[in-house]
Image: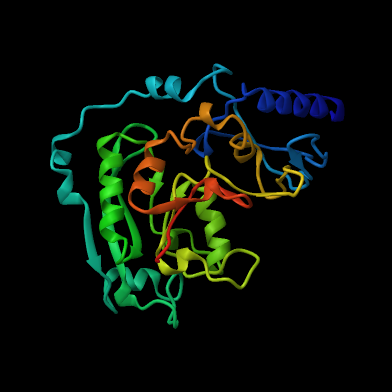
Length: 288
């Protein structure tokens, strides 16, 4: 068994480094759990000590983003979505209303950094990974509300695939950072979450409603060590595969990606341009 596991891991690592590995997403897990990932991988990764989940590979090992897109049967836009601007809305959140009751004591608590009146609840349309139109919801700072609506309306018109967009409160567990992990594992695109940067006492821009994480499972957060290797202890196999040859990975954000182009055009910066950590899912708006 140990020899088989070692051989499988070696083949998988070679596939990643050569750019031929291709994995399905969290909706299509095999249910298998890696029995051991204790080896230190030479070269670009470092100290893979935390067990992760294994994933089924695609039917073709050299599938590219274009091939994946062409394989998805995107239906015609249903008649009820023909006027999408009606679905891209912004609303104040008031104490006692439905949205307030969903977030109070979870992602929103009384604080000195951001008032409830500074937040906006957005509804928007998006195209999911199956090519179907869905209604999403998000909370952002009022300063960026119109910008975010414009970005996501353009993404919708481009039929840009997003797995899901739900309030992160739907994944609530104990605190904001623990909840964030659950939301990432569900590949949920989200914004406002009153929390600190994980492992620090620094307030995150998510706490101010000024940051958005887009398709986070395909666009992982990873620390880069001084020697250029990655600290991957908190990544599973699927996330790890998205650190390499990103230009050939379905749903990976790159400089050529429409999401990158739209967010940066609206004044957001991208975590994929940082030195360390690299945060490929993350767009934030910095108030000058």
